[in-house]
Image (cartoon, rainbow, N blue to C red; front, side, top):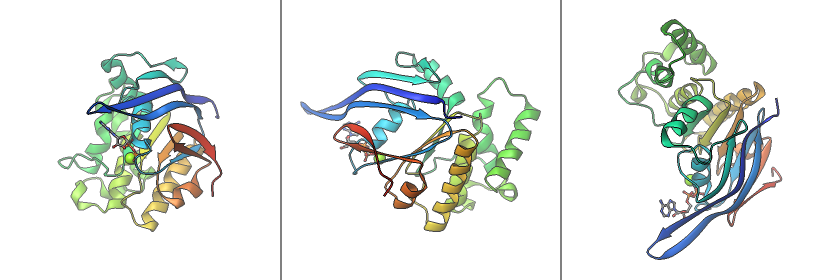
Length: 229
Ligand SMILES: Nc1ncnc2c1ncn2[C@@H]1O[C@H](COP(=O)(O)OP(=O)(O)O)[C@@H](O)[C@H]1O
Ligand SMILES: [Mg+2]
């Protein structure tokens, strides 16, 4: 518990558009530890999504380093990055991104099928456990369109947990949910942190801020700890 699982050093990202340079991330330095919920706040356009995508190896920084579980992943190729994403990182997005043609159970199973170390029996056991964890045992054969928004997000969380990652990255995970479902999702994420995961949530929500152990503000390309209220 409380080991550094994700570290970034001097991260920099600039977007170029029509000869104009937009410095989004100037110099980002932070050590994220297991067992914590982090909220990253900041104005719209501050670069929160850019940052979380870079931390999740979905996007490349211009310069600076990222370490995942003490391994420098700054210079790895796309194959290796996709392996690390599948194994060490779980993603949760505002719009869920579930496969509409797959049931709850199949959506959760998908990342496990890409993981060669699990056999069929283990996969089925694990799906059952995850369904229980997000309280969707009786929705296993539902398709996304047959589920409420809160339920869809719980499927997405179970899917993010499929390969037991150390890090969960969530971009506005409660952005399209009502207050009750928001609290429900936050309680699940909080209990995952208690079990040792590192949870990083990009958010606008005041409720998320209150739930977080540590609040970080992204402002003018710099990430800094701020008070929770
Ligand atoms: N691919 C891109 N090309 C050019 N500009 C971009 C691109 N992606 C994002 N931006 C710009 O970078 C800024 C930060 O975007 P984003 O990371 O999505 O911010 P946030 O999530 O904090 O709202 C925005 O002003 C946006 O217009
Ligand atoms: Mg965003």
